[in-house]
Amino acid sequence: MTFIRNLKLHNFRCYPEAALEDLRTGMIVLHGDNGAGKTNILEAISLLSPGRGLRGAKNLEIQCQEAPKGTGNPWAVAAQVQTEYGPVQIGTGLEPSGDKRLIRVNGENVRGQMALAEYVACVWLTPQMDRLFLDSASHRRRFLDRLVFGFDPGHSGRVSRYENAMRQRAKLLGEGGADESWLGSLEAQMAETGVAIAAARMDFAQRLQAACRAAENPHFPTAHLTVRGTLEDLLVQASALEVESLFAYQLGASRAKDAVTGGAATGPHKTDLLVRYAAKDMAADQCSTGEQKALLIGITLAHARLISGERGFAPILLLDEVAAHLDEQRRAGLYAVLEDLGGQVWLTGADASLFTAIEGRAQFFEVRNAEFRIRRHSHTSKRLIGTQTSH
Image (cartoon, rainbow, N blue to C red):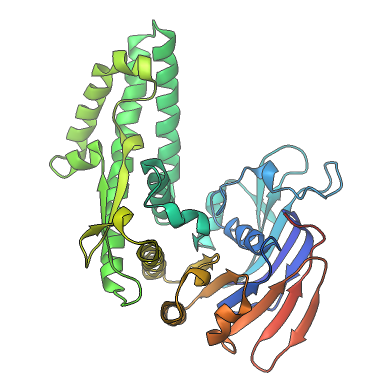
């Protein structure tokens, strides 16, 4: 069982200082007015896992605007995380001078964010993701890659290497007169990493599809997932080495066109994640708003179950304003699934009445500006989390 016992924020977003202590496994509810800082707490937790957090923010964007200027007050997040091997102290924050992010484990600086993956896995769902099925393919591709990254830490590095090689190739083509061997080397790197990216996406989608079917629930319909792209389609018919060779050939053949348009005419940067409502055999973008939300929740819960099965412990679930968009029956179904999943689940909502059904089975925290006090109830602890500013 992995969960956060204590959480401290320093100059983080709207929080000059904040602390949540004596946290338990199970459901934790943050309720309060819009703009009070509930999502900021979820973002802080998400930064305890590898990546740029649930907002994808740059390091300097997270700094509290009301913090004293200078190099001695950078933002920081610290937590005591209970793992199967005992408590671990994890910290991350902005370096005292500059824009890099530092990571500490048990008081020691560590290189790279991948060290966090050994201790914390986070899965989140935010209101910004509600348009996933209506947005462009790039949004769904980034969503898929984030899910893959949770299972295959090397996936992020491969995506970065591919994009870097593609940018270098585009620059050389745009300038003209590039050395053929240099271009060939970049295209070989794009072919190798591109096929590895496509294969990882396909493998993960199959695993997630199986998890969706296994977690069939009347409140959250089963999604049918398909990863579509030139490389993915080729990998169904040919070996990885054959697809690599073909992709490298295609890149060489499209140089003239790519010199004008930039980027590359084909590759894993064009991949899309197609989702259908399985029972209705209907594309997700054609479903109702409520059905789309239910599909997205179902995928998120299946992802959490998949992590739990693969890694042996449930991830920390961060569900931002999810309950507000569900009817009473679906809310009850969600809470039942979350309890069955185990682990630690953070839920936010402006209206505390949305969580009446789990009163006595969850920890409740009221988020309010400039206040902090503790009230003890017979079955739940309710606390006011204080801050001095909000955005």
